[in-house]
Image 1: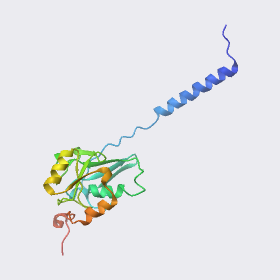
Image 2 (image 1 turned 135 degrees about the horizontal axis):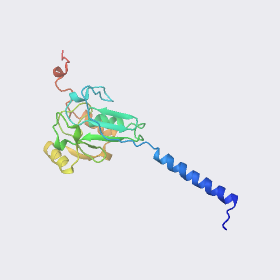
Image 3 (image 1 turned 120 degrees about the horizontal axis):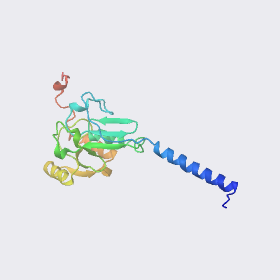
Image 4 (image 1 turned 90 degrees about the horizontal axis):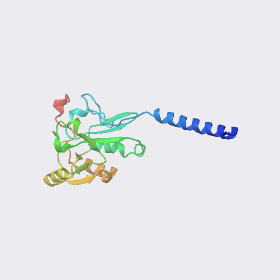
Length: 187
């Protein structure tokens, strides 16, 4: 006949109870998807407040469990992201892949992970606020635009506040396209 001591039975019971509670906690964890979302008419840039869809060029967004922040340009997204209080957020950053979409109306189905994108700066094309950072999923597409427009190709980790200031002040931007079309006047 097999006998168990009270102490052994108690230890085994506590171990099984702890394993059961740990397993319950794992199944109750909330699954949060950080997928990109579409830009809609009326969406305002988280930084400057401008209506995002009224401007050409790639846009950016930061998606985290507490919501989505949308930006009228990739430069505005980086300006926000590079603030010390934002760098540690558990956010996924997205930008448009401009190799396969219309510059004036980027396709939201072409949003890609900003950390793996290729960026082209120093080119003269219309964008919203912050200067030009054209975005591509494909390295060759980025280099082709850089050659064509005499720009330079960058990676995510190359972009700093100093670089953003340089591109914003370089004059290589058109951040107020056709104000009459947007209901503003030039008087």
